Image (cartoon, rainbow over the protein chains, first blue to last red):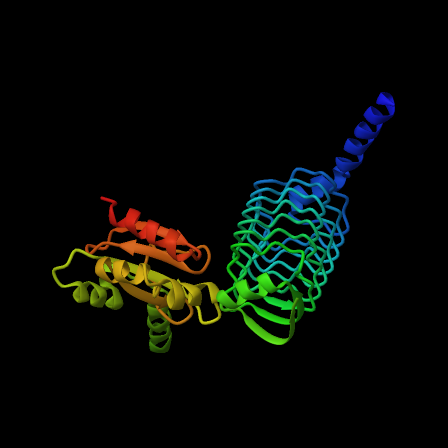
Length: 200
Length: 130
């Protein structure tokens, strides 16, 4: 039993850190890598502005304090990535897997997160001004203390997201479901309820 | 030849960044202070920046912030797409707020928005800087 547990931990570690060395080299040298295997790779504290990482697997990667201004992360896997303090200004992150992302204190200003899955993502104290969350999955996403002003929420179920102390000034909501407490908070924050906002 | 010289002068005048002391708007802000020992709060913004709008319309007019701000600072707004920007005042992100004394010495720079209470704390800290 103990052996099986140890083996599963080791195999788990191997699968998390099993990036392709050639892909990592390419990412570090060319500041981009499309469709690459970068699972668990260390890409922290670097400037990858304008880089294209679309269709890449960055699950569990370390991108802490790196800069990805105008980066392309469409159809990417960033699940469980360590992204504390990372900058994703105006990045395109459409249809991506951000489940369990560690994004505390990160900056997603002007980013496009439509159709992405941010379930269980830690977005505490993040700067997320003017982002697009159209059709994003926000189940248990933790936005506590983050600034989400001027953002766009269309067709989202926010009931299980944590919006405590979030700044929602002029954020726009359409076809969304929220809890009554979230609705009250959003209205206090001067968010804009456009059409079909359900508070239940 | 004269045409080229004229073009050089015209484009050169757009590219030339003057020091803050010779910036007309800065001079007007200093004039506004009179003998009072205030600081200039120069904010860089754009028209399509909700973070800037939040600072200008909400935070600057917050009931706790506004009296302190008015008493100790003169606000100077520069639209980075429309105004000439003084030399030595580069920015990385909008809004950027520069705090400058009467003589044109940069005391502090703040990047990004802040909630009213932390912003007031920053104002107090900056006011206390020597």
